[in-house]
Length: 256
Image 1 (cartoon, rainbow, N blue to C red):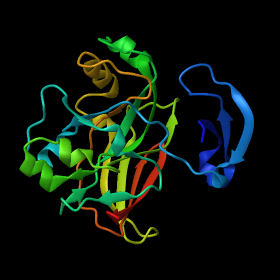
Image 2 (cartoon, rainbow, N blue to C red):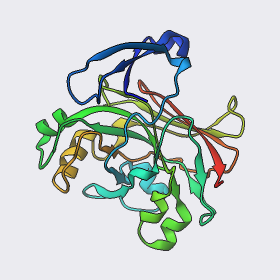
Image 3 (cartoon, helix red, strand yellow):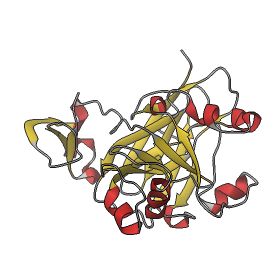
Image 4 (cartoon, rainbow, N blue to C red):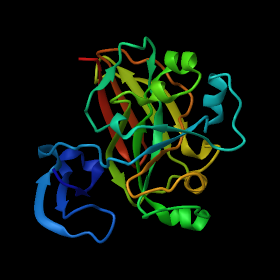
């Protein structure tokens, strides 16, 4: 198990991509080990295991409206535990405590700077290592009954991330798409939004969060979800695609 750099032309499909192994972690000078494999021959894990996942609620006005809630005047923060993180093709497990688990497709910011704290906008932009896809899986019924969101958002497997981190990505105006269905070849489009419709942009969010808590390399900030959230049931496949970042796919299973 190691970090690596995905190389090649993504438009050519998996057969056009390779993974080059690097020494240590990616938050610094990159040294290649010389090992290289076809992407189809490796298993991608979560591209990072963060010390914390900081999430932003109601950061798209259309999602706030579908929830019958006001758009916040400043970012609404909550946390997901690192133990909720899974990678591409890992199973989202439906907990027995909930009868209403839902998907939330989101752009995820990955922090690269050591000890980002009280960052102004320029420092916040420098603190960003890259971006990836995420799914803020939520037990909606528990969110309503608990009155706070820790349990509803924190189950094991409730934070799929991947398939990789792009360090050369402009998040200003990108399509965010979520598709769900029992047949992987015939998924239904549930969410279709654009990052330009965020209430608070990623750099603003990084700065804001850093004035609350120190951000460490590998930490993740989930930037909110557009309208269209909906249920997940055992046997489903859920796909999160963000334009320019690839596709994050996870099966949905009952808790084993």
